[in-house]
Amino acid sequence: MLFFLANGSTNILLRHHKILEDLKNIYMYGFELFWSTILCITSILGISILFGYWKLAIIFYYTLYPFVLRLGDIMQKVTIVVFY
Image 1: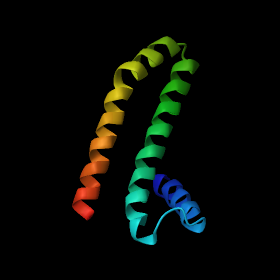
Image 2: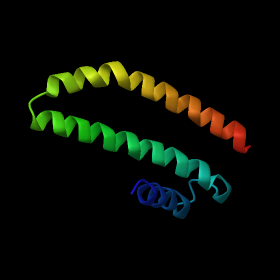
Image 3: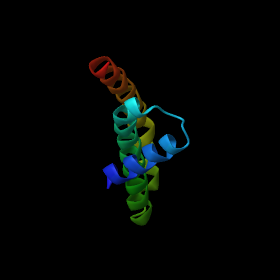
Image 4: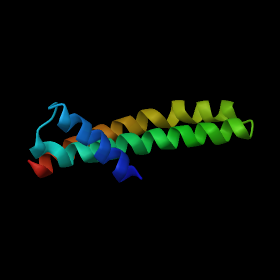
């Protein structure tokens, strides 16, 4: 599912000539991270609302999400260094 979403997002950018074909794999990886994060956030928030723990979900996001963003930034830099 993540591959399908990432591939579709990357292909849209390719069709509109926003990215180069040579960088497709890097954008695929970035979109997989993006869609994975979005799906995790919505599923955790949805389940917490369903069971009445939305306040705990908000606290969870404010404490964990800054670390997730930082790790994503580090992985992006490592990927660019490794591939290029």
